[in-house]
Length: 521
Image (cartoon, rainbow, N blue to C red):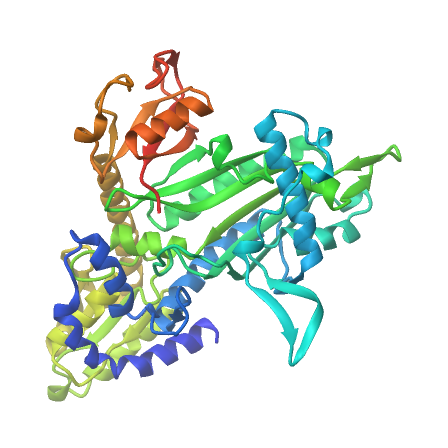
């Protein structure tokens, strides 16, 4: 279904939306975030969680449209940066997982031992991911000779093919991406969009001639993430994950985390630098201009439906969703007023919506035969950025009033409606960014003491809903002490260091390394 067909579908669906008024008293206050979030994703018609498999929600049209618009943002970045879209198979043979497990286990063991991976013997390796995947063991009634699994991510199937496609330096760089569903056997408590078993997943995988090419790709990934976050009106904390929290197959991992209103951080994007570690395992090499065989260097970049979860959690309020204009399935809803008293109202409403749509905006008409208050409430829940009412008096004055979901009303000339509404949408986006930045400023605070002495008990000073900014340059044991003492998780070293040296929270040594500790989803 393309976007225009989706609008037609929603218009039909909208006529039956009055039934949602029964949910009016069903929205918990957002101050009770742990109750508000799971309630609002269903009340706002994003998903239906009643499917009989834990962690596998049914996407409903409104939620799927918002997610598709997030995908469009990602596809736009991929097009701009020269990536090409592929679609790899869902099923992966067991042998490829064994190959990945051997590689990842070797890299993990080498990291823990502080040696080069080539120094470890094969018999020192152990499997890594078999307990996290869904297995397919039968085709019909026949037991498969080689078991298969549903992709948890796509390194193994993609790199198997990359080694067939890359032969010469002329084949590089290879920049690919796909948007698919991935599957992980999640045993923790599931939450819509945040922690699920069937994941709507974006992944970009690139192959380069050398480390410099991969370095530049990581920088490009970081810039793409920030552009997408800007469009979603989401501030983020960007950090280089500590070694123990780096994907074992990566040289290093960087991540963007959104601070949710309850003070927990939600990882929404990661980008990994693999150097040439995976290339060796998958025989991914090329012939350079001198005829020499060289190993490729690789990167990956991943995002998921957690982006939509972050939008819901950050921007919503006690009345429902507040959709950023960039991903609002409808940016404007036009509602007729007193159409029974003037036959020109409905044609004018339809003409205005058509004018808005033809100008590139996403608009719909709500002509349901229900009270205006019901319409207002329904569209507040769904977070539509702008509501426009048009009645006989508006037609006479050639003006109408636009109500903003972020608050306030603006009178606009009907002749200038598309241009004015476009400006209002930009202002709404700016307002959402300001609100989000203000919230994060309140929730991110400096740690209240300068040194975490082993004699101190920080329980009385640590707030469960705060992300703490600290100076830290300690080793693994220092970090373990820090996490055990505070009950918080170290996110990693920030891209923006302190301007002046500060004392490390654990070692007391001067450092400019800025890090955050928080409770994570």
